Length: 178
Image (cartoon, rainbow, N blue to C red; front, side, top):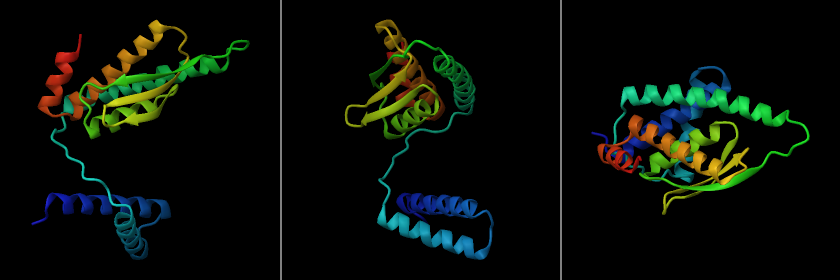
């Protein structure tokens, strides 16, 4: 029977091998064996930290997250395009600290990735110990807009927790939601 840590390493090796074969563009015995060798070397030289996942995937939460994420991508792309073609004004920006309500490693990572994928925002730093994301935001010019963006980040965290979080994380997020 495969233990949890060994299972995680096998899944990581399989994923790295899949990426390797996709990069080569063909599935041959040589590329698969090469991918296995490269993944073994990578996982030995750069071992992954143990990640605990106490939650489960909630399909309705995943659908809500995905739908809203798609809308956010389209709206943010339009907003950045408007800022880019607004001549004569320099867009203002800010670095905003947002303290997460349920700062698990997975929650911080997924929230940071989702924020960085949306145009106009980028993660500058993550304080894992305190559960704080520092986000560079484009097009922010007032304190009210800063607070609105902070609320959007917390709403994103809420959607991610409802999609992938544990029952305890879901309770924490619901109790903290105004």
